Image (tube, rainbow, N blue to C red; front, side, top):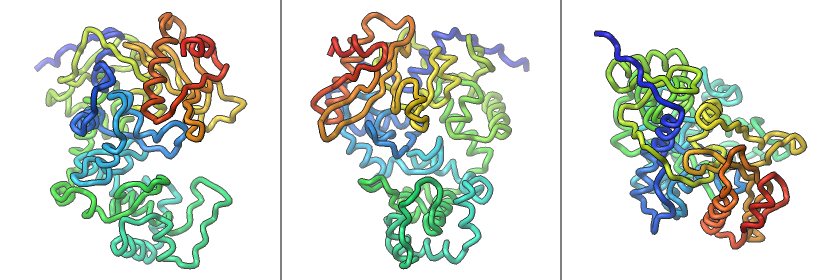
Length: 406
């Protein structure tokens, strides 16, 4: 049988497919966001990346806001810490919240902890007695923080706060190794964003925890299908990046999915490589959207894809020395309909109840109403964050127009 010719897509069509696949195109704000809408968005995008930076709001809270508008963040807290458990934490696209069924598809990664976990984490594998002591303490006291486990297992331990990074004490390394290998999991996070460790059988829904693990091939196929649905259309590089999947195994899985009709080969204008189209992807004629995109939003995970789809160059500058930053510390691109038209460096001044716009920038060929649309989005966001005012600092080529509009 002769393979079907690839579907040909213009850059505009691919952009609209990508936006629709990620849940953009519905008018916000909704009168009242429900758990049903939160669940539908989670099902659509497949994961929420977690990050500890809280200069504006926690990273995992923002993608739902971008798609749904102001919502009660307690819904997401309930989804990730209460029964029925809708989200659990594991290494997906970095640390992420994923549905329990997706957690099951990542068991092959757990089996590879001895080879793929960070060196600081892998070192704990050489201390089996410590690992067993930590598991026993989690079983006895969970949900429990790393500090509480350390106090019980190693009473003489004194936390070293003189530095930061991966210089972890033995108990913390043991917990991270056990988390990576799936022997323990996270039951949620504290108000200070510390993991609360517990046994998987007390967190993962029983029907998922007790189900047989899929083979690695089956799991990678399943993860790529989730990724393809969330992308709408994307290259092999894009699809495997969503869950940080290995290249060779992904290539083979994509070929099997295509042979089964679960993916369609596509040629996309402006893409540097062949692409894959999900057979159920919507192909809207237009997308009306307005949203600020967090640095860790799934739409912009893969920076080359972002440039190919939107002609938008973007880098996170959190770890760039201040003097070398071009746009700012925590910069959010502004999506307006089918284009990214600007970016703003935002900060929540919680003591002053003010959303600070530390810089604002406009893209070439942005529409004349960009400042007005951004002002409306900032007012909406400040209300969601419980802040009373929006203050614009005089930095960036959009700052003056934005300040005048506000």
